[in-house]
Image 1 (spheres, one colour):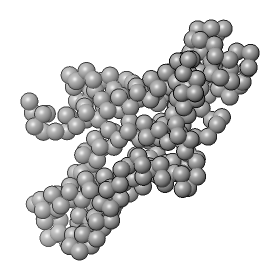
Image 2: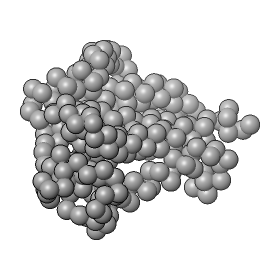
Image 3: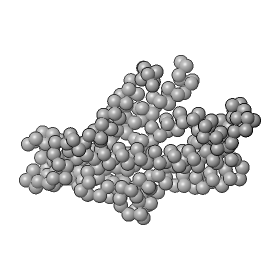
Image 4: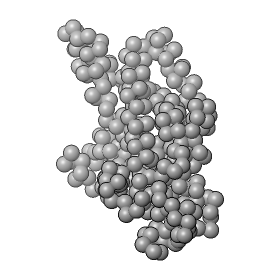
Length: 275
């Protein structure tokens, strides 16, 4: 870990700072919000940033934008993290089995994964979320369905490469079971690549979930969430702060996660690491 943090990659360190700050905000939001994010005051509608104690202004219902951005981080970041965690587990198991077993089973399993991956991800997520009904759970489920094939394909390719190594052959000769070889020998050596992909996908998951909420398929009012807040601002374009600040939150968290993912990729790539 110390070697990782000693990297000279400034963007990697910046990404860590951004992500850690947003995670802390999400965890501590109920304790640090200055106002009730659901409280409405029609006498304070559309106040600009800095007015009457509202640091980032108010929306069309007089709700404090700053408080709603802070509380919205809990939903957006949690949805992104949960989606990535579920997809990496499903994809790792599925792709690991397909790559290790091989043959006709591998062909059948991967054709099914490629069938799902062939659809445009966002459109498929919209269709699934719309069919299941607008809710946080259904949006996360829709994103899980569209993303797990990516991890399955990556894990399969890693397993096919790793299972021919000498230490795997030696384990087989010593009588190790297929399950032990897969879990104890192959998966740990594939975690680096999976971790890089997962880190990069956290930002994409947050953006996708916010997009579904923007379209009314994710978080439902009055729950604060970054995508739905941007949607509220679209109908009130004259009051730029309503959609700008949650949009900046989405951008900063997604770009921070991408900086971390790029840094991890550079660290784990031996060609770059040895330079």
